[in-house]
Image (cartoon, rainbow, N blue to C red):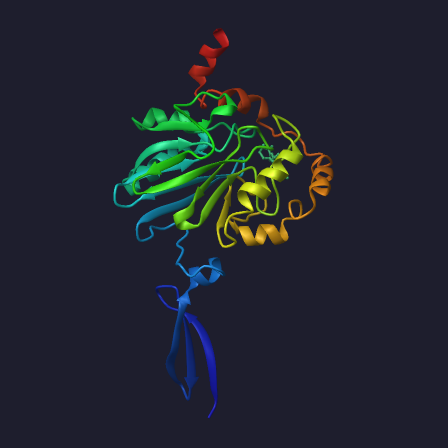
Length: 292
Ligand SMILES: N[C@@H](CCC(=O)N[C@@H](CSS)C(=O)NCC(=O)O)C(=O)O
């Protein structure tokens, strides 16, 4: 009898092993969900990128101009939501999605004073009454709430732990969602890369220490969501970055040598972005600040 096994996906993205014998097919085994197979090599919990999970919403948005990722996190019960690193050019899209999903944006949270795009925090605040802007206090940027290490950002039943990860800028923060095993690293840790250290308050030694002590110390299966990717990748894991990050898996002195020789061109929007981001991306505020 001629038999062969086929791996097929059903409507729920479940992988089925089917034994085809003499034209008859039998489902042998319903394996784990595809999303689990793809994303959770170390974690047995299901993961739903970009769709509503059982009690939370997670979305990753891209700004095509600066290759910045904005993240939406929400509690499906209370409908409270936060956005990490919104971009001014995509505020209309993001605001529309907030309305469509019926969530209430309580905070626009920045990982740092970005040099390559203007933050959408100020424009989101104009559209959503009660939405608070947040950034590290040490950045000296204007915001409703100045964050520091060990603070927690609460939305509904969830919370993010704030970790200080300077080195790309002094005020770089990393946000850890322990319950869901996710970490939002801003520019401190990128996928197979890291933030440059050649302007603002950049320091390769400080960045190396930040990443190793505050990020690489997280559980291996935690999923890494950076503020940018220039190669089409969307996420990584702590395990992958510890093993494969071509800069940060090296010794501290090798890392410093690499970072001091990157020779990257300055971001195109730097002259506009830095002053605008010191005032939450609100141009009226910039004008006022310039007049003082
Ligand atoms: N070409 C882009 C800027 C690219 C860039 O410099 N990215 C920064 C993060 S934004 S300040 C960075 O740290 N890159 C690290 C790297 O290794 O590329 C533009 O003109 O906007």
